[in-house]
Image 1 (cartoon, one colour):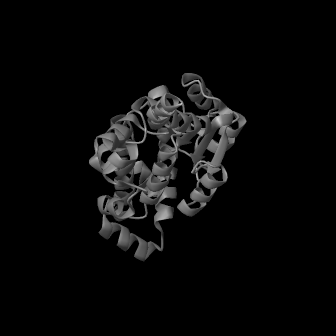
Image 2 (cartoon, rainbow, N blue to C red):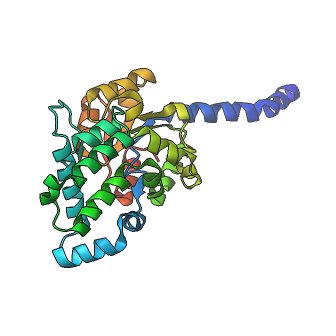
Image 3 (cartoon, rainbow, N blue to C red):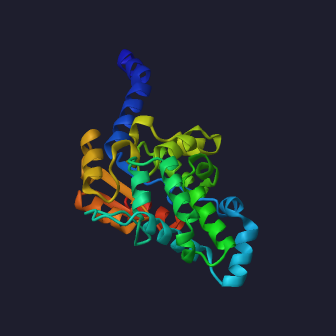
Length: 279
């Protein structure tokens, strides 16, 4: 009896550890995160500085336009440079179709230099002066597009959403398998990964578990991109939850059998993660 008790005490630690690992693995899930506007966001102050703070201020003052209107005007110009194509699953941003040039950039079929050349040719062409209310307006549009497509500058103008990184950390502590599935330009993404500012974001993801649209030539909400991640990593869709801020992307994921969370804010995201027992 004494020898049995000694054996149990000696091996209790290993039995407990094995049990803990088994329990954690039995309840671990797969969480697929979007990147832009979910884990990272634009630093509006930094972006305004690059576009031209003075120009933005005086343009808003005299034309009564807002930064949202500037974005709409940028989209309008980009759509003039290259007309939208009949994509069966066209990417959207806040339920607005992304311009074809942005789609080309995010799927890797055109790089930022090619796009910048096309943009500058269009803006500098006197025939297109009708699109601009003033020289200041023209500079703002030109600088806005430059800030959008310049990989190094775009990376500098982004910042982590710190409150969401804390939720990401909680997911990691639950031993869930964590993935990124994002419509992103490869050059900008590489700039982000090299930056110390984003170290806390990417430390929770194995490099091989990051799927970027420009690396595979597919864009959300194309069903093929969800098939790609499921097949490549041999995932069970029923065990997966996808977090994104665009409704169309989530609808496509749901059709693939993946549970979803429509990201609207940190408190709501935390509540949803808890309801699915992921944290």
